[in-house]
Length: 54
Image (tube, one colour):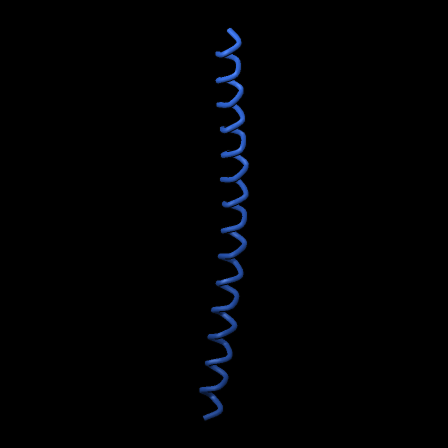
């Protein structure tokens, strides 16, 4: 019985850690995507303004 409880505890802990990691990764990736899109828009805006000056 004790061995089964130990294995179950390790499995639950592993699942909890994996769940937290995947949640953090999804939030982090969404933030990075927003930042990348913003940088692309700013770069395009600067490019368009520079081309109008020519």
